[in-house]
Amino acid sequence: MLARELEALTDGEFDLIANLSNASAAVYQSLDDINWAGFYALRRDALRGDVLVLRPFQGKPACIRIPVGKGVCGTAVLKDEAQLVPDVHEFPGHIACDSASNSEIVIPLHANGEIVGVLDIDSPTVGRFTEEDLNGLKLSAEVLERAWERSLNKT
Ligand code: SME
Image 1 (tube, rainbow, N blue to C red):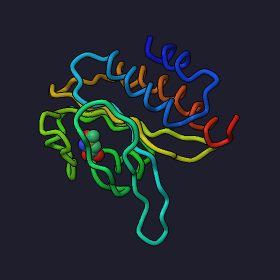
Image 2: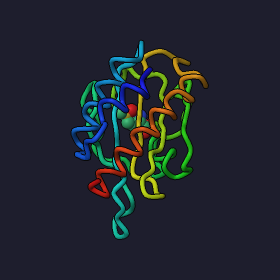
Image 3: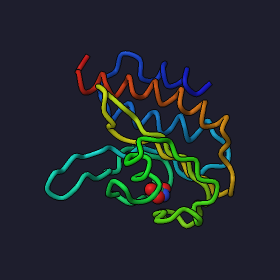
């Protein structure tokens, strides 16, 4: 099970880039029929506006910065709510990084009580992600939240 694998991979390690790198690889290897899996981190910027910045991923090169409120990822952060999008072409403002992507799931990640980023997964198949996937991925997200928190608290 993915959550358990992530627990083992991140156990005792507080280097965030290392943990997110292994986590993106584990997610990418464990799910069928996906073409991108990775992370964006929230950078708070009072002057220019809060923005998500690309972090470790597997798949084709992706957009580096996504303003909060834009696209599926920015919407997940703005609403602080996971987004399960069966057809990205019907999602207003969807940001196409890889034209092969047709469905997407995004889960906000929290540490020390606030949003720190998102886990984003894309599939070439319309309707690829189910509620069951979402529930399983939320468990995985909880493991990653603890790892992210360790990196902030250096524990
Ligand atoms: N499609 C996303 C952008 C990130 S890529 O899928 C990797 C969005 O609309 O937020």
